[in-house]
Amino acid sequence: MFGSLLPEIQVKRPDLIERHTLELVCVLPQLRRSLTLRNPTLTDLAPRDERARHYAGDRAFRNVHGLIDLLDSWKMAVGAEARWIIGCDSYCQAGVMGALFFRELIRRRAERLNIHLLIGVEPGRAAAVRASFRPEVTTEVTAVDLPGEPPSAPAPDIAARLAGELESKIGDDPIERQIALPELIRLWRSAGQPEKVLQCRYFALDIYNTQGLYADALHYGEGLAQMAAEYAEEDRRLRWQILVRLLNTYIGLQDARAGLHLVEGEAAKFVEHERPLWRGQLCHWIAMLYARYSKPHNLVKGEEYLERGLAWIEQDTDLAEADLHFHSVFNRNGLAMIRNFQGRHQEAMEFCRAGIARLDAHLGAEKHRLHRSILVYNIAQIYAATASHEEAIRYYSDVIAMDPNYSEYYNERGSIFLRLGRLEQARADYLKAIDLSPPYFEVFTNLGQCYRRMGATVDAIDAYSRALDLEPDQLLALLGRAKAHEDCGHTDLAIADYTAALARDPAQWEAIASRGVLHYETGNLRAALADFDLALELNPGEPDLHQNRAIVLADLGRHQEAVCDLEAALKLNPADADRAALQTRLENEMRLAS
Image 1: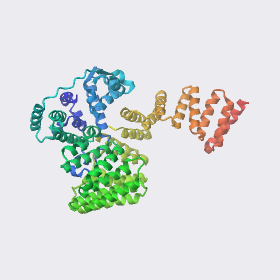
Image 2 (image 1 turned 180 degrees about the vertical axis):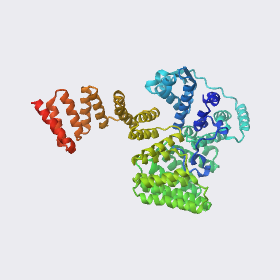
Image 3 (image 1 turned 90 degrees about the vertical axis):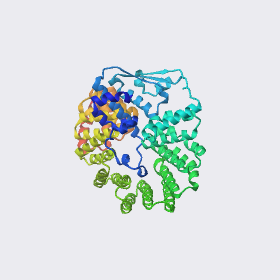
Image 4 (image 1 turned 45 degrees about the vertical axis):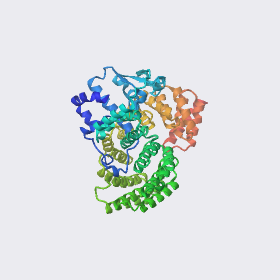
């Protein structure tokens, strides 16, 4: 779809291409030849053997939303009122991100862009596919059961010839290989050559894992280790790399259970007689799965495996000196994480500082720049967690100087500025974070909080609304926007946002009370009373709630009940400034009650 739109966009709105380069090369890999990646990070630039950090699992979702923003900007420019019917055949065969794109496009922009989605699905799947879309937008989705006719498979000899010709045409070009992957896999399967299928599936597992498309990587990776054991038994490095990529995929998907099943089962058995480095690396991954990704964290087991891992690394006599230093520092960084979780923050920072010093002493300045930056970042995080705000800002600034295009650093430093009340600096960091990345809801929520504290309520509403456009179920943005609407006098909109927030978390007594005040201001005394009743059930020790309910009860003529609430408020020791007013109100209500 984007391939068909791209030529016209390039002519009329080249700025959109530049803005969304990262997302476009994700779905159109051939564009890597002609487009320069905008704002590359050290994660993007690190050599393959220095990739000490993989992309966060939400990178793929950001790309999806970036593509929707691109389509939104384009259609608004050429005619939002024009009716578009987007036809998507073989929807059930779409990758995880492809299916998500269409679900989110319809949720976010079906109405604004006048879009209807027509999708062809496998027989019997129409109802299930429609149910995967949010209920409020299903009127803009038509799912049609299409007769299923399996594609005709060529004879094995013909399939082998066609696959061989396609591979010869591709040569060593990884971009062309990625584009041709589905066809190559189909042809080699038809040719009855599982060794070739194995190579293609490993290529897919590797490239989609590297790009942070973990769900799609897993599609190609499931069962691949067993397949390699059968068809590439002697290729130990390939089998190890498959296990590594699978583990990275599970970690990217935050699936600790599947990761532990792999590393403690098949992977542990595989490395029993392999080089010590591999055994040390496996111990590190097991440690991370226990100490970081399992819930609850098992820090004791994590530390135990890190110590085992370091011992194996130090036993590998084939390891180059520079690699020994790196792998040792990488292992100790894991222990720094555990010390931080244990509250032993100073020890955690010392591990990070010692790692930086060791890398600086033994490696050239251009080696392992990514991991050096990660160590600085970890120190910044520890300072932030311990409320050492100025030190945290200093280290965030240092890591930004090392990796100036990493959006999250600005978002996190901005939040420290926000806590300190340095609102202009917070806003600048949030805006920079937004500029550097496809959209993610957290930074827009933070920007909304910043604007609201600045008194820029209209801007706050816009920021919160942008966050909720990306993720409609987040509580903080709903509550923030409700308060901003309240400050602007948008009573009905504020009530709607409080109600939406309470649908997600009914225990938010402050939101219930705020809605009660708004109901009272609009004259809806029954609704106000119901809200204050509920808020007091959740927090009976809050004097303001008793006082507010007393006011509603008095207006309803229920003076004796109002007296009880005012007496309760006075017993709860309200602030001295409020006691006199409460006492006066109580005396008035007692006269009316008698």
